[in-house]
Image (cartoon, rainbow, N blue to C red; front, side, top):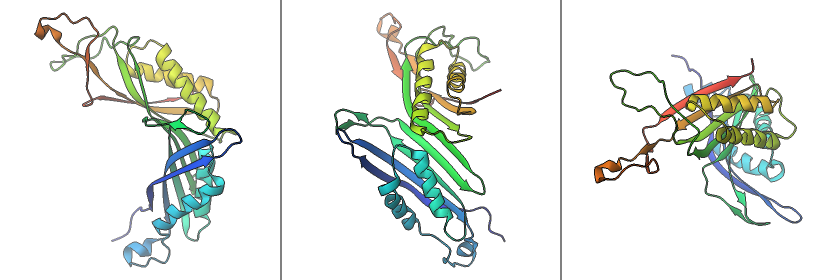
Length: 271
C-alpha cells in the first residue's frame, strides 16, 4: 500500500474587519479557506504528527495576520497567508480562497447586507503558482431581450419556442491573472461592471449566447485578463396556465422554479 495525494487545511473561517477612515469607515466581511501540502506522510501511515500544522493554528494565523495586512486587496492578503505557511519546514504548496460578502454603504459608518453576491480570490503558491479572482451569487434578471428558438428536438421535447422570454441567472465568474494588477479591487469592479452592462444591454439567442457576449466584452475591456470562465444556471420563470381558470394568459404571470434548472458553463479566451 502507498499513500496517494493528500492535503489538509481549515475551511469556513469567518473574519470581519473595520477599516477606519477620517470621515467614514469601510467594512470587510469574508470567509477564508486555507490548505497545505507537504511532507506529512508519516502522519497518515505511522500516526506521527510532528510535521502537521494544526488546523486550529491555521485559523488563528488568519486572524493574526488580518490585524495588519487585511485590506481591500484580497489577493495581496491571500499571498501573505500563502507565503507565511510556505516558510514553515516541510510545506511544499499552500492555497488560499477568500470569499467577501457584499455590503452596501448606507452612511459613514453604516452598511446594508443580506445579498447573495460574493467576491472571490483564489491563490496557490509553491510548486505551482496561480492567482484567480471571481464573482459568485450575482443574481440578475431581465424581462425581455432573450430568446430560445431553433433548438434540437426529439420525441421527449415539449419546450415551446420562445422569441422573447424572461432570463434570470446567478452569475459565477472566475478569471486568472497572468500578472497581478496594481489595484485588484478596481479590476474586479471593472469586470463586474462589464458583465452587468452586457447582460442587460445585449439581446441574446440563448443563455450560452448571453454568456459568450459577456465574456467577450470583459476580455475586450480588461487587458489584465486572458480568459474568463462563467457558470450561468438558468433560473426558470415558467408561464402559469391561467386558462384553467377561464382566464387569458397575457404574458405577465409566471411561476419561478428553483429546481431542476439548466446549468450552463463556458470559458472565453483570447484568440
